[in-house]
Image (tube, rainbow, N blue to C red; front, side, top):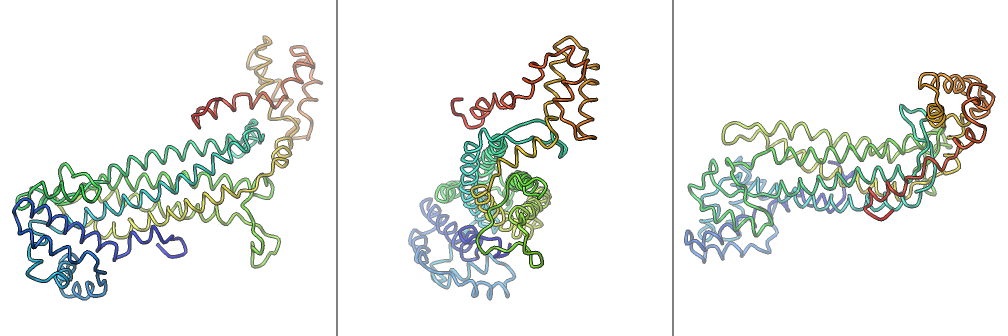
Length: 436
């Protein structure tokens, strides 16, 4: 996580001050619940809230931790400095460090997920708008990077919309899965703390109680969360790669918006490079980099160890901050993407009708010619287009075997672009859930 690829709202979730504020709220709510149960005096629980408006001193907590070598104890010591040693003596009663750390981490992850869901809505809105704008803008579809058959730019945007919508649904599920808390004490047995305390803390912090914790919240939840971020990052790169290909000089069917005063190269003044989408490809790699460590965190020793801790201190802010920045950048790229419909048509016609070969093949088989013979007839004319720059339709019209099976009018009809766009409305209705 570096400032260049970070936005303040997401970064704030991972600031030490935010973490300590969450720790404080967990401890204070736990004291309230214990007071209601008669475990601790109500006046002591009330005293903890004296620190409600305190700005915890991060430097002071670090100073204490340098001696204690324990971050939670350092925080509790600092809290007692504000509340009073006697008043704070029941804070953390029956709890273990993981109760605070794990519950806090899941609060941070759910807050991060909420921001990411808003980011995805921006991307989806931009994709939908551009899809309808270019619903009928014909371009060549490609397989293996080679011209295949006509499609539309709108369908390209719609395809990406559907993919990102699936990503949003996965993130909603991942958020629900990660939104658990645990206040169950050492090895998770509630021996020294009542389950009602956990229920109260979770209710107050917007979580649900972990059904069974082993002093730590099970890390399969976190693995799924980070895996979901990795899939979203891959979908983001899928869009970025398409834009990068379209911006290639030989293609130039679309390009990133190039602002006034922008420079593309320190050496070549003519350059307009797809730097934003290249950047998105790189950022996607960083997000995916966090997935394997999250999965490796699932296997812990017995009821707990802390091999996961150092990993999560890095990957949690890195993945969420990076993806937040990247999704906002992607939304902007899509929103301002410059589309060149004429170049799309020129590219499609570069090989003079060659992309209609399947229609001719099917027509010949329907006219009674075997598929093998029909393929041979179409391919031999298609190769003349590839190798000699001929016009595919004219070659077909000059081929006696083809004309014996199909009339000139039937051949002409096979080059109608509208044939390839006749079901666009149906696809849009499926993707966007709106009447065709």
